Length: 108
Image 1: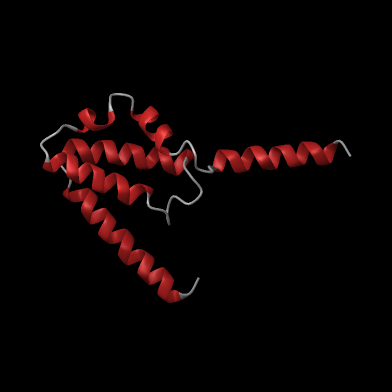
Image 2: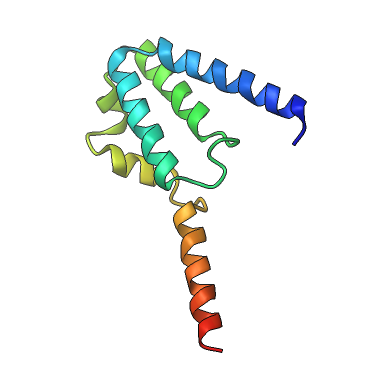
């Protein structure tokens, strides 16, 4: 990764954060909780992938339509998050694989 990639990544992240800050308060709060959840257990390609920007776009559309955030995602935020990444490779998957490899090596 070159310096230009780092600078471009920072620009994109700042633009993303600005979009989040422009959301209504309830959307912003839920988005921040989703982001925390994904940073803990989320997909490997979270930072570079389309997931977070897609959620912001979804929230912008919902807010523009006058809907409450819980009308869009339901009351179980974790279930909403899990459903979005159900087919994605997560850090938990990588951990399980590494544990499996270590256990396999210990037996040989």
